[in-house]
Image (cartoon, rainbow, N blue to C red; front, side, top):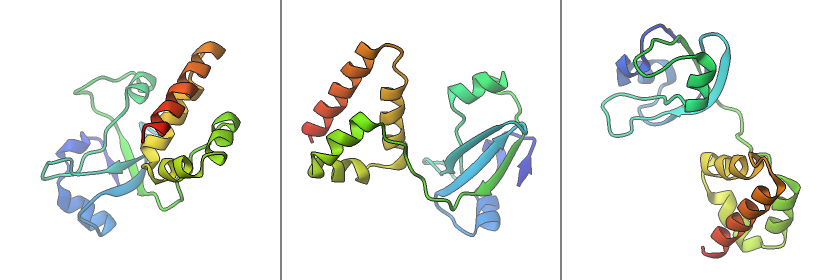
Amino acid sequence: MNSDTPLLAAGSFIVLECFGVKGQVKVKAVFNHTITYRGSLAKMGFDFHVLGITKEIRLQLGITFGDNVNVELMQDTETRQVEIPNDVQKYLDSNPEKAAFFHKLSFTHRKEYMRWIESSKKEETRQRRLEEFIDRMHSI
């Protein structure tokens, strides 16, 4: 499905017609023929489906709110896996209960935790974030 109009203008009937479901749909999106993104179409309380664009993608595309963007959508049926750094994996391996909880988190939450840890520019920041991650897993 291609659209040069904002996705918010698309009605939920289009999602049903294109993907055969009324609820959330995991999709791969290509914005302006350049940026690929894996996300979900979801109603989020509206009568229509929404696909959010992250700030990072908006910056890469040089767009802001209200700008038109070309969006190509296809249903995403691939398994979504999160790359887990070795130090985090060692912690999860030694804490099966916490690992089970972590793996029950949504793909997005697991991805964001790992992105948060991995995006550290300084080793001290990474260690602090890893410790915070461990503390959060312990408080569960």
